[in-house]
Amino acid sequence: MNILFIGSYGDWHIDLWVKYFVQNNSVYLFSDKEDYLKNQPFDNVTVIESSGYLGGLLNLLRSGSHRLFQINKIISAKYFAKCVDDAIRKYNIEIVHAHSLYYGYLSSFTKSEIPIVFTPMGSDVILHAQKSRIYKYMAKRAFKRANIITGDSILLQKRGLLVGAKIDCNYIIQNGVESSTFLPKTNSLRAQYSIKDNEILIFSPRGITPIYNIDVIVESISKLVKKGYKIKCMFSFAFGDEYSQKLKLLIGQLGIKENVIWLGLLTYQEMAAHYNASDIVVSVPSSDSSPKSVYEAMFCGKPIVITDLEWSYELLGTNNCVSRVAVRNSTALANAISRIIDDDKYAKLLSSNALLAAHKYFDYSDNMKRMEKIMVDAISGSAP
Image 1 (cartoon, helix red, strand yellow):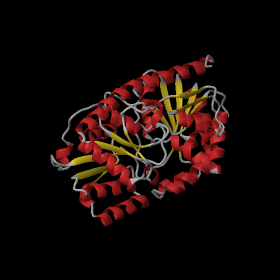
Image 2: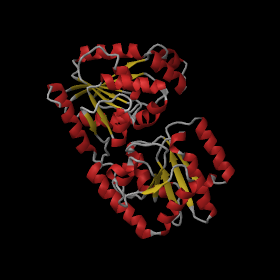
Image 3: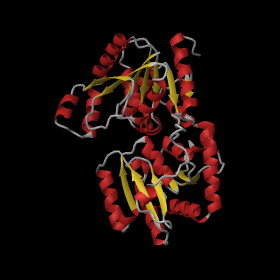
Image 4: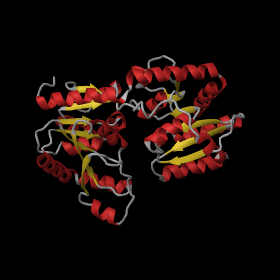
């Protein structure tokens, strides 16, 4: 197949999909050009870039303003769509895969009649499109144009139906985890970070944005430290902003600077190493849909604390795969962490069950093979 992905070249989700499809297909990527983002290392992919109406000036000024680049995306959508149509003709593209709500919206302006696959992010549809008129409008356009819709949870699928998605050709496909990278493995990171044998190392792999409730994790660490637990917590993040500054101020006020390790942006291999170095992984957002970071931790055999949200019951059920806590409850989170620390038998049960569930449901290759068949069928006209 000649496949054109539409998405940001700084998005690791795109990189993950592309890695599989380059094995047997000719793969192209259209991305708006945002120089402040760190490009993913796309191999054997033809990348097509456009700055849009304002992007050239923003890049020239070395702007790192997420808001200004978002404005550029909105006003340049039809221009980008023309660039996509040009690429479709030039490279004889057979199918388009638009990843995330904006790029699905962008694809709705294309003139080509080839099949379009639309894969929204969970928060795009579960959260934003339910509350914002702008997001809802974008979602309705994207869903109306798409020939095939994929999402990573039943929850996402159900919320999509409320804002224009069709039930036909609407599939649950996990992003999947590369089990050759994410697996239980010892490393030297604990020594690198000077973690003592009697210290518990916690890892928060989610972004530093309000939806992920990093402040709640910080407050729970403070509670545990006050109870006498020897804790260190690692936070990974792609970039700093006003929220991260507020977090650092909170950490200072709580007197736990020595208990926090800021990591910055990590590669896949570095993420796997940090999961394996940790004793407990924490992911407690207010909204979620089949989070890959949770599954990565499961593949590494780590006990995980997550928020008690609908998505987690779809495949994980009520089995002891994860520990669940109420949304934005630092006391409950602290108690869940302390139980794992104090009850070694319980911690091992969570770890072993998580590893089994991960291999059963979330293997990368299995999910990508299913996606590839759906695309081939769409091109041949045999899709249901």
